[in-house]
Length: 269
Image (cartoon, rainbow, N blue to C red):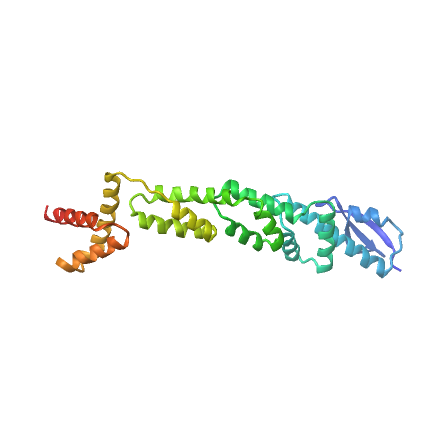
């Protein structure tokens, strides 16, 4: 059986030690593994001993790598498994590493999901579907996702959606009410709000404008339509194109006729 003839401490990583068998370098181990197996000079090792030591050392290395990875932020189990695979760890070693991480409380998908959701609620205006999809990508089980999102009452999601809609209204003050509703619907859907929530917000929306604000809105849209059609059409066909464009955007015919007359006056001056 091979005999340990020398043990040296590594210079770059003082927590690891080089093991020499029969005068030749054989492998390195973590300090904790060195102590556990009571490795010392003149100790005899069987091939089975060496295999077991190397396996335990790989787990220790994986455990340490995972702790460093976790030091930046919380991680899901799936994220850690992928990280360890990228570091060329075997599946058996990864499984044992994850067992140790769970045992010492370093990973917990339920706690991770809640923390992730709370961060999203605090730093973004995303809805439940977006958060759910993000958690799925991180490998969180569907049952955990459902339990996590279920902690937020429907009223809170509705309130958050209303806040998103308020931003849409403010940002699109030169568009028609119909355009704003469509924009709001698209925005809420993109941000991950459920259809029922979006419908409720759109149904209850109130866009209050005085005459001057309404005029600025239709005039802005009329100018855009003019730019689009003026070079292609003239006379009756030009007016019809403008009317159709503004009508589709939700303006009434009285407002449309006024805008067209104003465009004609500008063209004559």
